[in-house]
Length: 196
Image (tube, rainbow, N blue to C red; front, side, top):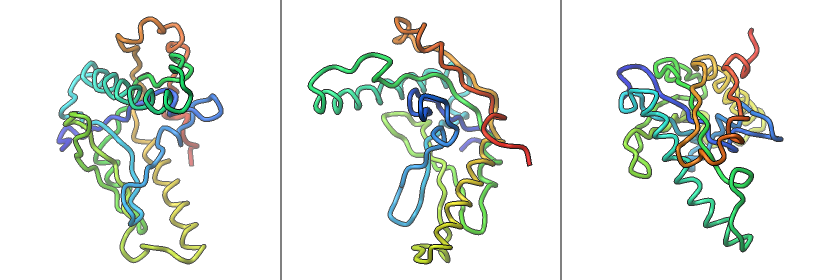
């Protein structure tokens, strides 16, 4: 996968916000992928999404799936429809990341992989996975747990250094709330990290 050397990270509002502000840690929020400590996040394979328009289409479809899933949970919990924009997810844009540089961020604690994993009929969907190496699996010592956590943060900081400037758009199904979506600006990747 990604012989052209790129994957894309989608920015879906409000997932990348914390305290109503853009948060790079939220953009790279890691989900638990298995019981062995593997963590990861979704990306798109730029071999399959070769144009900016292809990625925007992938992002708009991903946000639509998220909205549908969230709507069901929201209506069940609140007994009303969610308010568009304030209580719904919307695609805002994406960042390209150099796939080889992402893979090269492994360390003595983590092995980093990009794994194709079709999801919601999207063959371009992949995971960036951080696998805890065998000799540090199931840490019981607090100092080992802390080292794993600090290394994970360092890897995510290095991922940010591989990113392109953002490509932003408003999806066709969101044109009625474009004035609200356009108030959300995706920062340049330099805003995600401090220079050494």
